[in-house]
Image (cartoon, rainbow, N blue to C red; front, side):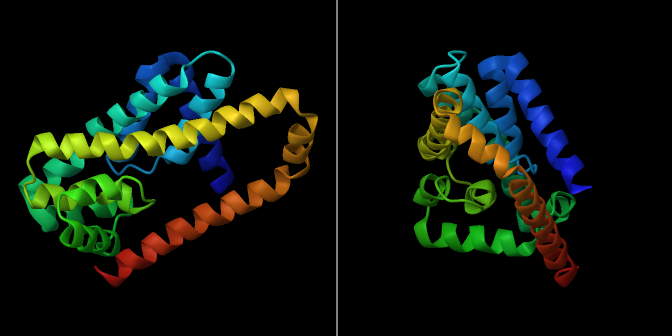
Length: 210
């Protein structure tokens, strides 16, 4: 089951980026930033791989990803602004977002204030939910979008850079290709285990907070 989920995600990501170009990158990162489970760790490295083939420019790919983060964050921001915590909890359950994730984002925002949007965008997990408390606090839109973009750009750039470097080595260094082929099964098992743990952890958290 999890193998099929990963295959579908990868196929969907590759198809959208291949056909949509920079717009496709922005669209996928918007989906991720709207708290829909589509990991940026899949999206941006593949965009980076296409940088290595000459299809994309690294800086433009990172910029497209950051713009997508801004667009997707509007959804989470508006939910927080219009409905507050109750609305975020109500609709977040359908995306396996429980009170635990919202609590972490709330604490982070309470500690750092508006700068939490910038800092949080550089951190795994927190980056996906930080727009909720910003909306609840009715943070001004201009600084919200400025901080979101500035915080998202290095994240997108870093992941794309990794994908680009792996793409460069894929054909030029046979040891990289051999290592990936020899580790195919192990990588698959680890990915399936991580996805399974992620879903189990989220579902358990939701059951604790009915």
